Amino acid sequence: MQQTNLRDRLRTLSKCVCDGARLMVGQGDYATYAEHIRRTHPDRAPMTEVEFFRNRENARFGVGNTSGFRCC
Image (cartoon, rainbow, N blue to C red; front, top):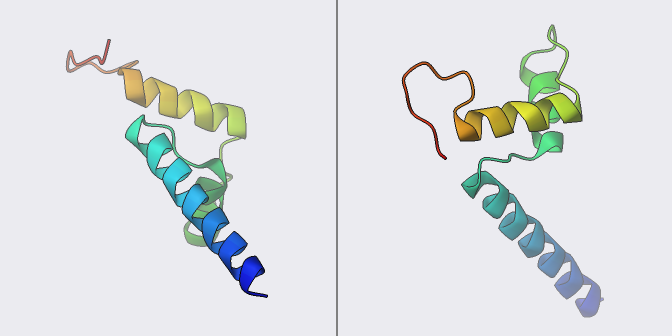
């Protein structure tokens, strides 16, 4: 039983590290986003996973930004 507990804790830690790394590079977690939309905006349909990825990439690199800021 203790081995299962350790395995669960390592899995949770791994997910946190991966989620943190994604956020640092501007790529959020789709499942978290979709759950947020379903819970807080039930009248809106969530973006598809592809739309979400493109949205995060565009935000990361300043696509469509008229203020003149671009990452690269």
